[in-house]
Length: 269
Image (cartoon, rainbow, N blue to C red; front, top):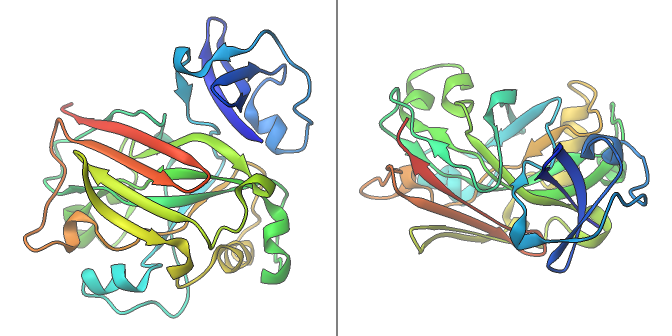
């Protein structure tokens, strides 16, 4: 299943993506489907995928990221790999449609991209062992964890650095866990203006998805629709010599095997 949210004349509507078509669903939102309602009731005729505006496929109740979850990324930023997952929050206002745009705020001079695998919780998870953690995952999607590197370095909390308005383009849809397959066997690539910057397998994660879900569930209960962004591989702008940050007019594209791609522009306020 590929579950999306799209803009219809009567507002947001959930849909199933089948090939190059979107099938509207009766459910009020994707949240109800993620929480267990079967997406079988169709609300109308299929629409061409190219004719609809895809929105963020879910508005997570809780969204949080994982820092330094690829060894090569830790190395390029001059940090030691962590001994346990590093959690940080992303506020609701960060959620953005897969096509963005992302507004370059005036309070940062070092805006950066982070191509990441996103994990959507489907069944409540509280203190679950890693061996059963993937049973609580509804599916996966593509995420750009946009980051203000100067604020990340200068402020002890990462709220501003990671939670600027629209700092999390995501989508293009949620691919269900059964269709997505092994989350540790996906190729993730990021381009900026057509230049390939990141190209890594999720097999290189320090803490795999099952461990991340289990770890987080021991901190607080995870609810259906919650989102975990699992860290970025090497190749970010802050790790280059010289550093290369995003500027208005830049186009960021992120693609993950079996999940699709998102693409967005950086714009002035």
